[in-house]
Amino acid sequence: MPAVRHRLLATAATVPLLLGALSACGYGSEAKKDSAADVTAKGPKTDGLDDVKIGFFGNTTHATPLVGLQKGIFQKELGGTKVQSSVFNAGPAEIEALNSGAIDIGWIGPSPAINGYTKSHGKSLKIIGGSASGGVSLVVDPKKIKSLADLKGKTIATPQLGNTQDVALLNYLAEKGYRVDPTTGKGDVTVQRTENKVTPTAFQQGSIDAAWVPEPTAAKLVSVGGKTLLDEKKLWKDGKFVITNMIVSQKFLKEHPKAVEAVLRASVKTNTWIHAHPDEARQALNDKLSDPQISGKALPADIIDPAFKNTDVTDDPLAATLQQEADHAVKAGLLEKPDLKGIYDLRLLNKVLKAEGKPAVDDAGLGSK
Image (cartoon, rainbow, N blue to C red; front, side, top):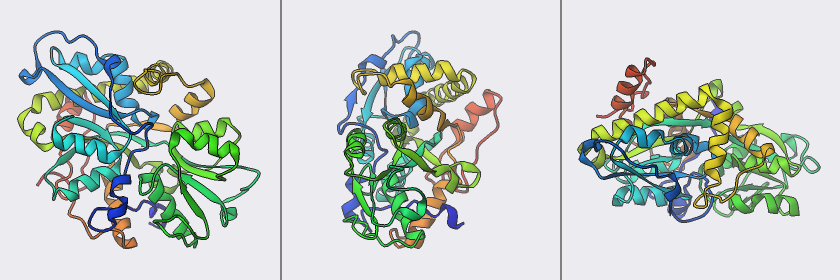
């Protein structure tokens, strides 16, 4: 499947320099307590817990936790157990938080999830559900780049060295015959690592010619004159690929399955509500993004509307695409063949889906050992 061979993953064992850069492309650099998301806890405690600590990113590819918190769905499902939430930017930081117990459950991109699992030899985390597909585009300056054949000699931004979009771009360029040093970003095309929050300014100033970025950064670039040249969905079968997973620490899953089930139930109910009420969901998402602990201001309609539309929320973790990502990285020589068997535990999710009258999802043979 040459069309989808475009996501290369780096692990500590193979490309140590990239480990600190694997991320899910949010804004900011440190975890922030999201106090505004906390709704009053009422009723009996779930699993006897005072709180459940969750982590996520402040962009539209994390619509499930953002909308679910804004609408109080997570708190309702947890009853008297309080939701404590933290906002992250870097995937490794969220993995560290999960490993240390600073959070129990998180929403995160595929690269850091795979990296965290393989680095711990399968002992740190489990992927317990899906959350989002899509929401990534190559946006260009139409005055400089008219087609995909015009990329040679141009400078293209990605959010961070080694993050999901960065390695996706590197592999895409390689498939098109361009030579680029993955570490320096120098070559036939220059790959410039630029934080999402400054990418629009760099684009307007002309220091970059294009960017391979997630939403809402892609929509922001379009709003200042950019043109979407490639939607990453077009590189995947049926236009579906995992961009955000739900993960849990194995210790928390073992000790508090009822709490994990409650969070999964809230996730499924949130996704159902988003699909049924897209306009209200878009507004709830924007309201949550305006939280001072996330971005501090709402996005204008010409940004939030396309960003929301371009991201598909899903309960399905799209496990087959995760395996494809790992396989492509192995073929590219950036990853020793990993043992991903056991990275998924979808039993509680499928229990919730059955109770909600929804079909079960598949783990692509990567379920718990």
